[in-house]
Length: 392
Image 1 (cartoon, rainbow, N blue to C red):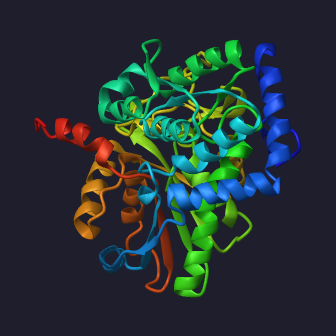
Image 2 (cartoon, helix red, strand yellow):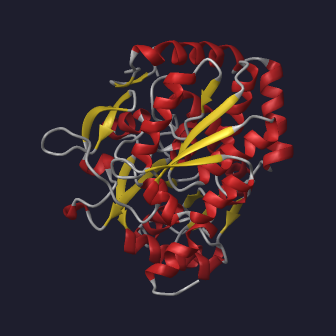
């Protein structure tokens, strides 16, 4: 990454003047406190004593027998709150409090980032307001209730596609009017610099632990890493600590929705083109007129027309392979992991499991595959029940 927040040609800071002061101040604060011993020690304490790190690297014996290689699951579903999101929200909220901010705002898709922001707001004594697309509010009622129980105010966004893109737009409008007292706690590794770098750094604990745990269990690094990609925070957290290890292959799995050919998907790197969205130059889904295209995924957290700029760089350089998994494949993979190992993954994470199943028989028996289980599936049970015609 360059000093102006570029990953190759991607990244940067494309912001209106009303927000430039806010992102510049955030960059300066992050550059200062990321190396401050007191800040680092307090964040480490919170991650350990409050969030429950390190999360396990779980050997999966039945997947190992079925897929033909040694399979491990990185268990971010066991982090407090049920997903990887708390790694980032703890870091950003602590930074905001250190900067003297007195209010947090956030966007959320699947609701896990909103829950994680509500958690840190309660833990650190900061009021929280969350913007969530109206469609996502409908399909993630459980997480809306969790946010409100934790004391957050949830705003349903009824404009546009009523999904994550529109929630981010509303959060940015709020921030432009309130940045002197408010921190916008962006949940994914996208947006203007310094957000992609900052979110990656806070999420890199996933890959750093995986390196150490795999070395302890197997005496060497993994051969293959697989993680789902929407905006890309859990995947970049897993991939970044291995980026300098050419022998470690990495696969990011996007939302194939109803199929790439249908146009109803969220596979930005598989079917998109470079453009600017939410303050960064990256890949995004666009229509023939160059307007941001609508998206679809059964997994609300992957229902986003953009992707983090570091992923765009990895895509263009070939460092990471990006694929897409359909809704049907993800639903089947959720049931597969649940029955094989007694672990119910989030629909987002199930995309990674589906890609692992595709690769059955392609790896040697002694090769090591690590699948990022970025979240647990409790939040998706109502959606799955409705899909099957079951009333719950």
